[in-house]
Image 1 (cartoon, helix red, strand yellow):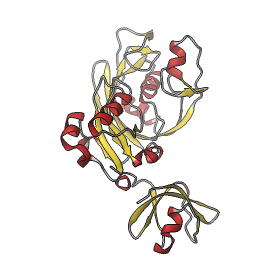
Image 2 (cartoon, one colour):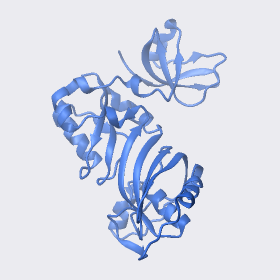
Image 3 (cartoon, one colour):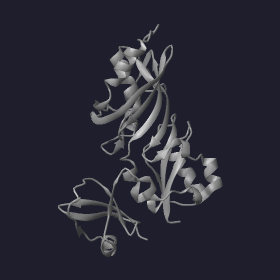
Image 4 (tube, rainbow, N blue to C red):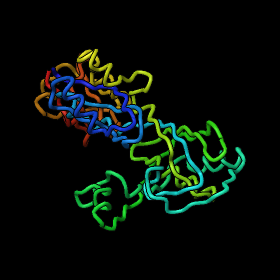
Length: 287
């Protein structure tokens, strides 16, 4: 097995690590990792890398994501979802009009500052914030800049709303739900979450673990099929071996910044970047 990516459907009740363990058993491969952790109570798309593709996990994590979430009004929790301890409650909640809710949602689109919940996997001094909190430590997490590309109201109910979110990496939907409540003046938390997309991975194409057992290695996707959001660079065939051996190549008239998918003769060679007019190999996939 050389490796590839899996588009898996994580069910509620399993951790992302549980999914990795299951894949190791099903495919009999030790080198397995996931991109973009999903909370145990959440469901949806979980990209999983197998074999040599595990070297490319960091690039999957750069991808934008799409979520469908339910926001419950009437209680705010320390975790941002309905599994946490209630820190603020309001009875007899009356939701604003649909127009007012939509206006509040639109105020979050674009670049925003967000403070992730303390009950998260963010590392503080090498330890996960949630582990520090559970062991009695006081944790302060700095704000981060994220981008909300789209935030739509799908349905307004008695004490909940259903929303769709397109967002950048690093966005916490739990925090977004709490912040929406603050904007509307009502304590709120996330009561349901499904991730429907991670970059090129879509929910409609995902496999359950049961389906993976049936398909086995046939479920693997070629790495280059899942990294379309990275700019493609076509190297001249004569420099293929140089790239594979870690040597730079002088490049003219190519101003793209960031990580690049590098090809030669339509063969995916790995990831590179442009540095002072030189194509620098960053991750080389051996053929």
